[in-house]
Amino acid sequence: MDTLLKPAPLKKGDTIGVMAPSSYVERKDIEKAKAYIEKKGYKVFVHPQTFERHNQSAGTQLQKTLALQGLWQRDDIKAIWTATGGNRSMSLLDSINFEAMKRKPKILIGFSDVTTLLNGIYAHTHIPTFHGPVFKFAHDYGKQIDQLFDLLGGKKVAYPWAKTKVLVEGKAEGKLIGGNLSLFQYLPKTLPDGFYKDSILFFEDCHEEISRIDRTLLYLKRLGVLKEAKGIIFGQFSSMRDNGRPFGFTLEEIIREHTEGLGIPVVMNAPFGHEKDLYSFPLGVKASLDTKKKTLTLKETAVGK
Image (cartoon, rainbow, N blue to C red; front, side):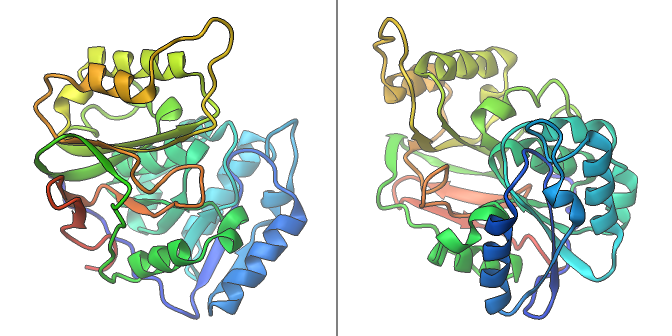
């Protein structure tokens, strides 16, 4: 496994920068989240780009790129927390200066549409990124935010697996790679070859038709992505749709079909996704999955030396 370029741990008093790489946000939501995070002892700088609007998007691609890279290069900004998800973060991958990022490893937090940036930056730089709540909803989480800050501070974290359902028993060890399934499907062919190999994949999704999840998993299977995995963790698939003629297959049936014969542990209903139970995963960090003990254990910190 390639050596990680770990950012410095985040501590109270440090400044967190906020920008919006996807859809636009309302100022009142960001101000509410800002007050919540500042009450926890962190400083927050909200980049002006956060409140830009260009159709559904939070400004143009140029505005977003300048905001992200500007925050990244500032010495006083210790972490970048994406404002929200939505659409169009993938376009930033064409204009990011990854070499400049490598010279200043920094914390990046987000999920959903930000899946493209989390995986893209890790794949190009080997800097761990953090799949966790977007800034807009920070005040809606309690213990999940505490777990995120423990993770960012280099502390040992735990994952509650009581509701997790084991589909295939086993043990696995590999780097954590994944995010939103609908976005992740586009990455194996557009990011550096093999960034997903020897990994424990983790997937979640929402507001998708069951038939599309079926096609996406089949596509990843045919690409050979699932075969390269050491284990697969499926999180929350919320508000799923079944429009028109009933598809008939359940999510569990689809997952079982497309992971059959892989010979790796597979679990579902893990605590992450577009619901309240969103615990944070560090991308690129080595982890161990044990279905018998129902545990996911990080084998190293995502920050520090």
